[in-house]
Each structure stands twice: as structure tokens, then as C-alpha cells.
Image (cartoon, rainbow, N blue to C red; front, side, top):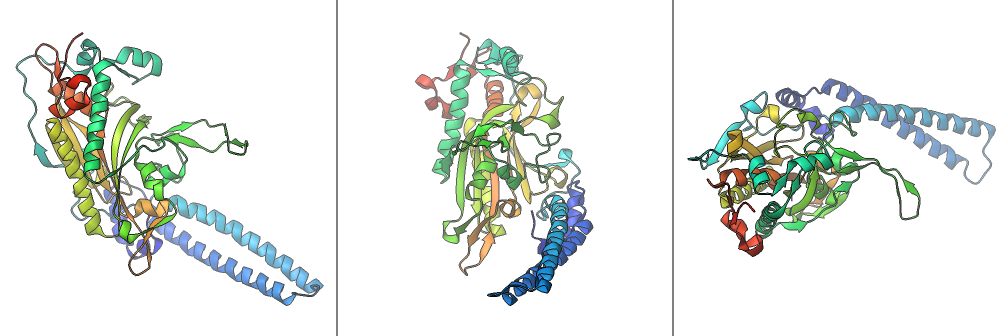
Length: 438
């Protein structure tokens, strides 16, 4: 969400940003609603002042019939104005939450993901002198993945990890956590069943409220007792990443500038309904409903240079993780048409996946500036004593499933075994270096 004063001063830039991001935003309507909102706020303040004057005039004595009549009239007018104000503010917020961040000047223009730009590549697609298997066949033959029983128990896109599959995924998570802790990130295991505001605040709702037709989030039918034993039907949701929970850690708080930047790395289970990807990647584990992930989050001062530096540092960590795993990978700079409303700049990392004969996304790094912090109301007090909204950034360190796919397929051997990347072996029971048929 942007500051309305900034919007008024940069209407043309924001209209251009919306166009470039393929978004429809009624900025003119928003500004008209803001004018109405200001007028109504002024009117209600005037009427409240009048009510206070009447109260002072009658203080210590019985009000006259005229004063009673006037007081009743003022009360009714306040109620009427407040009702109008409520309706205007609802319409105002419906548009306000869709207003996009103006992207960085170096973000490539493009209509969709086909126009993202490769800016870095390390390693080339793996070559084999034998007929390769995909991760599904490897997983089944090595008895480390069971898709059939996963679908039976969990439904479409369900899966079981078994034996060394469990060890390998947990090794990936521990490897990522250890790397980030060494880089100065505070490790966190956050809640994954959460209230509504962190998802709105971080921009995981397309609008102001949850829309089951659009938002790829699982809503839980909730019926629980609160601390006093009262029935609580507050909406609860399963997170698709640790990002919104980590960003909301300081919601409605004012931090000190000396404590910034703040860096979190969150390990969590992640749940995604994938409703917008029906029919895509139906084969295998590339697109699933639940997985684990280590996420990076950084909170900085309202300084673009500092935020850009943090953004690049997080991307470099992801590159280092892929490099250490020995996976061919590349970095894409995301074009305007493939970016959501709040993003200022975005990069994707992709690893080579032989069975797809293409690169597969393993993570995204995004800079939102203050778009999220305004929604979550996270501020800091600067050296002059002024309160400012922080800048917020996030990046995937490693998810559990897609790097697993890349490892199984890139490290497969002619006999059907799979070599364990050297950096993961110390996390494997007995330092296991190879996964073989039982």
C-alpha cells in the first residue's frame, strides 16, 4: 500500500506502473473518493466540536429544551456523516490496496514471464551418456518417493518421502539454515496456522479480503475456544511461505534505527492450493500442495540503496547455496508484466532439471520497499526522532521439493543410483554418499 500523498504527486508514474504490470487500477476514482473522505472527515470533526461546545454550555446545569433539541440534531448528523464516511472508506480501501509500487528504473519491460531476462548463469545443462530417468522413476526405484500412495491418502499432488528421501530433504533444510545463520540471519520456526492480517499485510490476498477464487491459500474452517472458553470463529489460514509470518513479527510496532537491518531465516511447512496452476506440471513433484522451505526476510531503513544492497546479498546467498550443491543454475531478472502489485524489483533463481529439459524455478527474491510495512504498520524511529515505515524484502533460500528434483536428476548414475552432493553428506545418517536400490 502506498501513501496517498505520494499517489497524488505521482499519478502518471503509478498509472504507467499499473499498465506495465498488467493491472487495472482506478486511480482517478481513488482520488475522488479521497476528496470525499477528506470532506466527510472535516464535517464529522466540525460536528463533534459543535457537540463538545453544547456540552460545555450545559455543564453544571440542566440543559434547556433548545439545547436538548440541538444536541439530538447534532448526534443524528454525526451518525449520518459517519455512515457515509464508512461506505466511502470501504470503497477507498478496495482501490487503495491494488495501487502498485513504481518499479525500479532498471526493471525490464515485458508483458509476461516469457520476457524475463537471464542476467547470470553458472554451469551448463548436465550431459549424460546413458538414458536418464526422471525423479518419479528414480524415487520409486530407490524407494524414497511414493506418489501413488501419496495421492491415495492426500489426493491430487500428494506424496510420501521415505528412507533417504527424508534424509536428503532434511539435509537440504539444515544446510540452508546453517548457511544463513553463518550470514547473520536469526533462525525462526514461525506459526503456519495464522490469522488474516499477516496475509493481507504481506500482499498474499489479491484484494482487501481473502478471495477463494483467486488467492492460492488454504482457509481453515475454524471453531475453537479462546482463553476464556468462548467460541472463536476467527478466520485462520495455512501459510504458503514463512514470509508473511516473519514480516508480521513487528506489526504495529516502532523499531529503533540502530537495530536495523533485521534479518530472519524462517523454516516452515508451506501449503499452496495452486488453484491458478490447474493443468500445469501435472507430472511429478514440481508443483505440489505442501512442502518445506527456508525463507530469508530482511527489514531495512527507508533507504533504497540499503534495501538494494540487502536484496543483492540475499540473491548471492541463494547463488552460493546452488553453487555448493553443484547444481547448474541461472538468475532471471523479472519483467514488469510478471511482477505483482507491491514489488519494486524481483529476481528468480532456476536450477537445471534434466527430465524437463529446461530450468525450473527454485526461489524468488523480492524488494517491496514500504508497500508491505504500511499494511503491517511496521515503523522505526530515525536519528531525528521521526517515525518512518521500514522497507521489507524476502527471498527463498531453499525449498524442499524442487532442489530435491534437481539433485536426483542431475546426480543420477548409469546403475540407477544417485550421488549425494558432498555438502549434504555430513547431514546424512552415517555420512551416506550414495543412494542405491534396496
